Length: 334
Ligand code: NAD
Ligand code: UD1
Image (cartoon, rainbow, N blue to C red; front, side, top):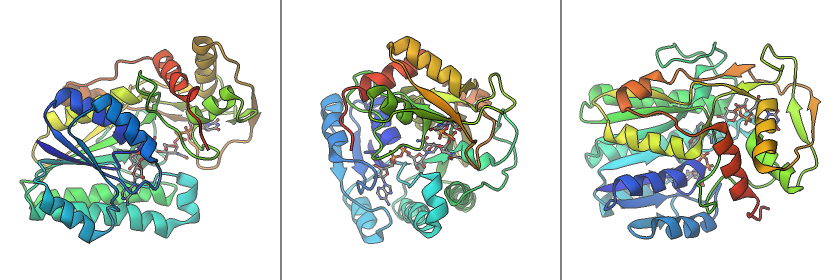
């Protein structure tokens, strides 16, 4: 079995490769990543964990010739498409960059899957496609406009995949809508290490814990939630990774859409509290104004994946906080 993993050097892709190796010990795992948001250090560490049958190509998936060459050289059985740009704020500043990268990469891959009869496709979507809706989000909800170009790229890619699968019954697609992945592989060798000042909560917390940033800014405490701070469905990155294997193993004809979340919400203050208790470190924080575009509460209805993929998230918020810190405390970031 040959599996193409675009963006496989990134946060979610690299952890998924570990789950893929455990489930498919003899598969050839081919990463195509242009290192736009990752470094080769991740691949070096991934090789320590996965050892054999893993190959890396520095390829931009938007470059059709490079994609064509890859499909000619390998007879892929499946594609997992992680490659994408994901910073919401940047997508508002530079919409064309996001539309170009996230749409053209998907169009190229789908085209070559059809040409070379690759009938298994797993796509990284996001809870963001539910827009300004009401939690728990369920896959059958109709999608509302998202508040930013990043979210729109995910919604449009979903549409493209549905349309293509409609006229090509041999093209089977699993669309995975992720909630908030955090944590790291238990080895501490790979994890989430964004450059610069992080946008997302957990990488910000670990930088404060390391003393690289002074204070965490909590974006608002006036929401209608348990303690007034935003509530999210945090999911351990290794549970999310296992969700991809479950999606591939249980892939059905047509397009099937699954939420990958835990079904539970945790507030910002609850996450800080758990992080401090589990790791024995202090996270100084101050309450600031809400971040524009944030919703009060986002969590999944995760029952469809449990029913159809026989998958559910097993790790706790404590596990997520411990593993995130285990990775971050030893990692030198820029
Ligand atoms: P990431 O930035 O860590 O990984 C993405 C990888 O794709 C990076 O290594 C980057 O270098 C690569 N890449 C980007 N554009 C490319 C291109 N044109 N050609 C080749 N490689 C390219 O992000 P992640 O957190 O691992 O996210 C993976 C996917 O999941 C993305 O599509 C993202 O939008 C989606 N997603 C992420 C989250 C999240 O919270 N992390 C939530 C929902 C959806
Ligand atoms: C954000 C994106 C979402 C994307 C996801 C993963 C927005 C509006 N949404 O989700 O589209 O899929 O990241 O990349 O940007 N918080 C703080 N202080 C911080 C950072 C965050 O209080 O420094 C709060 C937020 O207000 C929110 C929670 O922590 O309540 C989680 O935030 P974050 O980690 O950025 O994820 P989302 O906003 O859910």
